[in-house]
Length: 154
Image: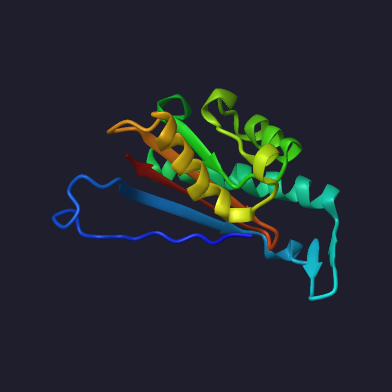
């Protein structure tokens, strides 16, 4: 398991920090029963969760493109909530992004939920893939179904 947080500051207090450009969130809560759990067990309709999740991801990505002015080839990295290889490859195909721009960690860490986003950002920084001015798309989707997409300029 993991956790996620973001610290926001005024530009004058952190002039060289990465800049949060904005984000979009969409929901399809009519599918909230596709993944249910309690302390004893979790039940998931994985097939329908994938189908409806990808529909929502496509709608959210289109909304993010319009709201944030995204042109897919102008974004340098796509940092996604990584569930599995199948999920990642399906998302890449669904929204039409270059797989070379998606650094994966699920083989090493498994499904660590939204904690994959800061871990991937950290690894990209260590590898030197995040340069000043790099445009990074952050893409997350949850079983509720909820989907958020945002941009950070490094």
